[in-house]
Amino acid sequence: MNQTGQTQDELKTLVAQAALNYVVPGEYLGVGTGSTVNLFIDALAASGIAIKAAVSSSIASTQRLQSLGVPVVDLTLVLRMAVYIDGADEIDANGFMVKGGGAALTREKIVAAQADRFVCIADASKRVEVLGTFPLPVEVIPMAAPELMRQFSLLGGQAKLRMVNDQAFVTDNGQHLLDVVGLRINDPLGFENKVSQWPGVVTVGVFAHQRAHVCLLGTTQGVQTLVYD
Image 1 (cartoon, rainbow, N blue to C red):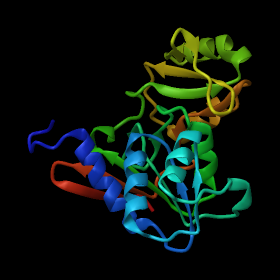
Image 2 (tube, helix red, strand yellow; image 1 turned 180 degrees about the horizontal axis):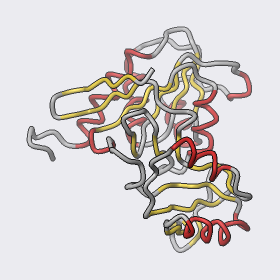
Image 3 (cartoon, helix red, strand yellow; image 1 turned 45 degrees about the vertical axis):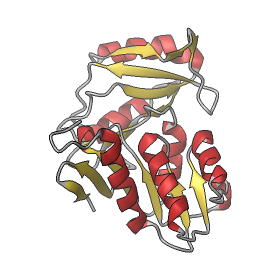
């Protein structure tokens, strides 16, 4: 809890509500994944804003949207979306992000790439000077994991296979995840380009090419709007 008595969840709720101002009625809406997005989905369902349909980045978000009566369509049926709304694990001063703590980074990056505008919703703890404090998620082909762990070690990082109940975590795409610590990502665009070329990498959780255009940041002074256009 911060000095004003607001919890992190309360700050997330503030930005979730603020994001409703960016929803375009009658259009397709891209929806991300995670705890902050869950609050946005709840707010969207309660708002009465009529959208054409949502395009979801994960099975979990699809299920939540549908359970609240929000229509969901597959991305293959949509050419463009006006807005994609999602959270971040880290965001810097240029709108570059680290994402994937919720394991949906591949679908998030695909959906974000087909939206005209990326609106990031996050609490103030996610704002960083340099990306790399949060463990970097990387979705990988399972057979490539050992070699990719070695590659990250050459960059000064330590990569571990994400585990759940003593089993390798499996993404919605049937792949595994590495979480990499010990990195300072001073050049997000260059880093994303480099790691994306390594054989066996499905998606690296640096969102530089699909950066945020706007970030709604929940702070002790209220919602701060950061614009990167």
